Length: 115
Length: 112
Image (cartoon, rainbow over all chains, first blue to last red; front, side, top):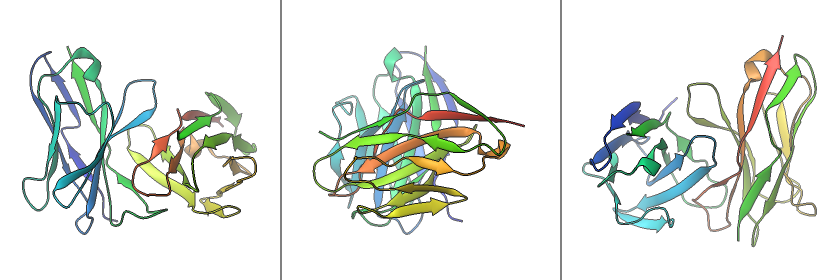
């Protein structure tokens, strides 16, 4: 079964450093997402991306965050200057259509620890 | 606004027990409803979904019915197994599609 893959699975970084989390969505999918889950809290939507632009973003997704699809396969989340509160599991997801009831497929997550 | 509330965990059951995990939602319009499962060390996997009122989603012995009148989507399974131990997330997608809004997750632990 096709799957969303994410790298790295775990990254430790110092506060203030830039981090790039990478994702390879399912190959025929057109919609891409990032979610995050702070330990013990809800899974939260960060951003959705379609046709090479952001289609929706949450209030969490401030100027420190950016997303990019640099080639035909990768989808990246960059955090420009990490803060302690950015420590979380980050999930990449993709779907083939953006209509009611579509299935969104998630990767296994990248666990980011900011120290 | 849109939100999802799940019963708090952890829920601990013996093998073959009946499972109910309650989920209620608040939404404008007619959202689609989902249950996702996260097994230890793994990502989120879709368990089942329902896209309109009175629809029943089912998979792997789990089922949930979209109840508009009670704004609920409770997850049930008649006989749980140790392998069902995981965290279960109820979620909704507003009728515009795309974004998922999750509940806080309910941890299920099934003992032999």
